[in-house]
Image (cartoon, rainbow, N blue to C red; front, side, top):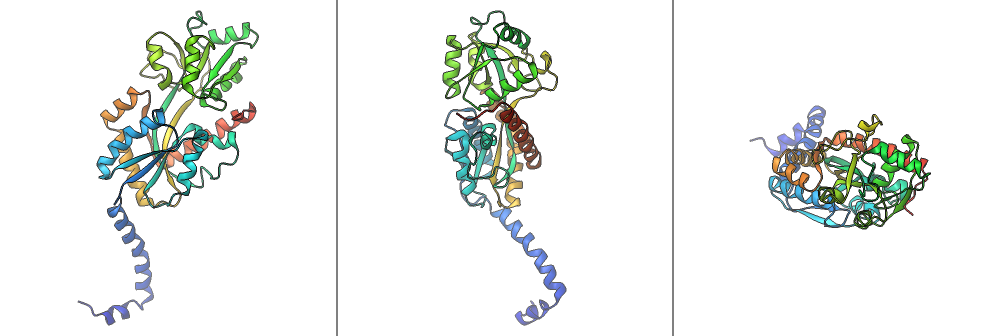
Length: 334
């Protein structure tokens, strides 16, 4: 075995010192990857329990916790379109033990609320996208008995001189933005009646107080199946397996139209790359599991893994695209 003095002497060589400097980060990274996770992981869900983001997060977290051999604890911190929970995640130590589930409303919040106290791009590192949440255009079949497609709704809106109402889960909600975009490209008008949340909006839609709505699939699928609501289009670029006979908006005269809400896993900026890579790999494996896919579909969401890089690109594209819709239509959260 080499003596301490001989080791010290060898380190005096500039070449050896340079090689050691290069090797130490690799050793440290390997040690971190092997040691992590050494305790439970917190996943901040910035929305209330029971909603699509919360339910999808719990399904995926449960599967990932088995592979990671550590519990993933769901921490619901709702408020202001998810900015309360996202702000908490941005302040968390980037040690691999705090993550946040991003949803489309949180991605777009700064367009609607102004400064949020963090930068969604600078203060977070993408881990991977998790699920797609299709959005579906539904009407009350008693209020609009003759409307069975997008063109029929547009004709009805034009016949009423733009006085026909539609509802949404709130000003600036994804349903609101999607309808405004459709109005722009379809060259028609309808009056927005915002509600505070999807549940009361759907309740009044069924009751006939408002006749139409772009809603996430989770909120309206049971009512479509029960015949209380009629689905006339899905906003995604492809048809949805849960509603195979319902055409997309693109198929009904608007090529290229694609509106899909989604969720993705983020980590505080500065989280070690080894942790990001491991977490993303386990996420990909979990989302490829048939049981996980079936559970997600049972609540109206769909497994949709994308790499960290692809998720970052999608974040930027949606931020710019829907930001333009918000600006062009002077939409605020009020």
